[in-house]
Image 1 (cartoon, rainbow, N blue to C red):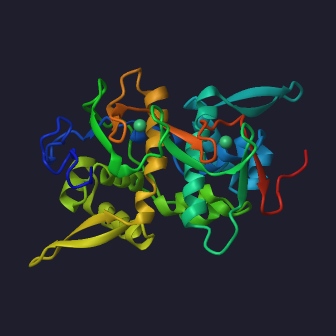
Image 2: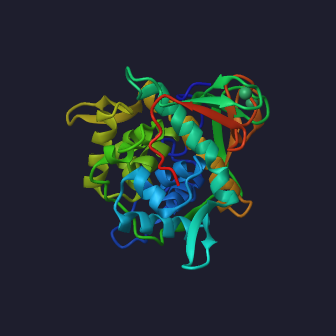
Image 3: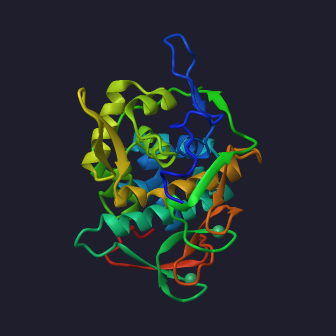
Length: 339
Ligand SMILES: [Zn+2]
Ligand SMILES: [Zn+2]
């Protein structure tokens, strides 16, 4: 099935979760979506980078500060948020004076495959002539490997053109409660300040929450400015800014679909389309931890005809990856301070 013939959520306007156009007095409603929920829980690029360090075994405030090189107040804020959202927990490690370290919870540990999918994208598209920063080795098969996203039923790699969607039991819309963070981080390269990181590079290309949401819509084949604006309830100036940025970063290309006045739609480049694995890995995580057993969206793998869970797996043996089954070699000097 090609993208042109498969069912779309927005362009045919028949899907139940299609948003009505916003009126000035309307409450902002947003489509229930596990990707959006996941991004709301994780927060921003710094939170991703803190979690990444946790997978390296970093636990303590001063270590995070040393490795990430971010201001104390920013670090304290992100650690507090990640703890409040249930991804980290504080554990006392010294009685006098009382000192705490941060440990991953089950939610946090289960986010590891998402990180691997982002890393794979960064390795593939953003390393340039540099070597990829980390070489993963899968403990179970002993092979150097990369992460791919496979179908939980037939184990084949998932391509965006081979997935169709239908509303799940949690479909619908919800009023947006939290104030949207529309601010972009001042210096995206700061994420890579101390350690070269493909995850950081991937986040620089994707950008902020709004960019994630635009990319998500694009995977539902929502490609036009007005449709994006209606579906997301986003301010036009922010939408223009994010679309331009995603074009500059090579995620989208602009394609003329109407002239006089000229109108463009935003289509994925090969690079942009390759973000699909990361997106559906987030979707699975949000379904598992944030949806009370009622996923908003059901994914069907057209190749095998079955509903599936996106599974981040080893490209060598196709077993699911988790934080305990990976080793890695570094292609750079580790800046981790000794304790
Ligand atoms: Zn399948
Ligand atoms: Zn393997």
